[in-house]
Length: 379
Image 1 (tube, rainbow, N blue to C red):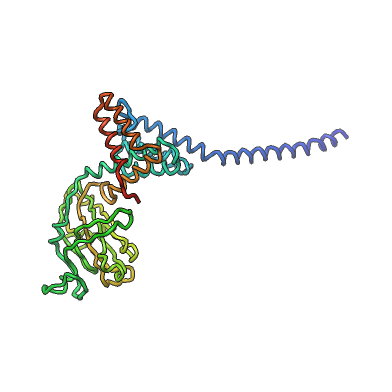
Image 2 (image 1 turned 30 degrees about the horizontal axis):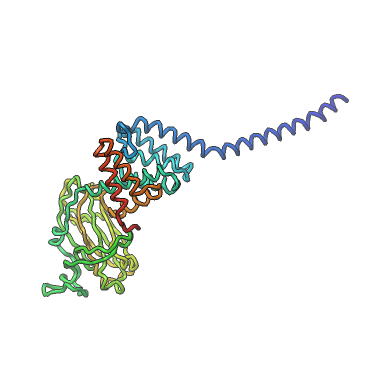
């Protein structure tokens, strides 16, 4: 009798205990799943911070516009790996992006610093420190691009070899030397920039009607291995051309061509204006090679009135191509305005530095105040 009553009592109690334990396990699992992203984000941010302390150093005294310098490349590369993991776990948090921007500043990777800080600024638009640092990254990139060496190739390509089919096309350059003369010439176009919102610019161009190639032997210096250029369509034929395919190729002694740039330009984009392009020739640095500019048919294969011109053809340093200085200045202005900074802010900082006997610092603040006062056409 007692045993029966004991079993009747204990069996339900055991069942209830198991149910409670199962609920606890499920709840713990749910809490772990909920907390895991935050915990993993915090772990990776902490690891990145420790590596950054080892891998970069700040000038003494550290000022608000100080730029860190790299002391341990391996440590900073490892820090970037942890920051990428942190961002993957919490993509909507600005902190990891901001830290990555700091690493790229230390490495002198100005473009990547701009990208990282811009992401941080977009996620935390009301944070004045992130806004200030974002503008500082834009400023560093703009100054680096202004100081970058640039070797024009316009005259060199003007005397290059033209390869074109023996088919007559309509152009302003046909002469008695033959059909090929219709495909090439020297002129200038006045166009806005298609993708950046910059105002109109009048630039000399090398007219190259599709389908044709312009070839020239070029020495690629080790410090300027990036080919930078713009391409545009004569406004006269904006309605009749369906666009073109722009290519840059490197041709070896056997005539084999390696493409290093290709972009299909449809009618709408061509009608909007100048198109920026660049090609990385770093693998051929220190060598002389045959560089080929090619204007091919548009998306529909129609070559009618493809009056495209190549302009501003030049070799420049890595990181110094493809972006307009005016765009960088406009983005820098916007970031600083978002942070509550103004012409007056920087003027005051400049006067304080001048009165304290720090002329170089004062000059930097006055330069920034001048930039904030500029009328720049932004995107």
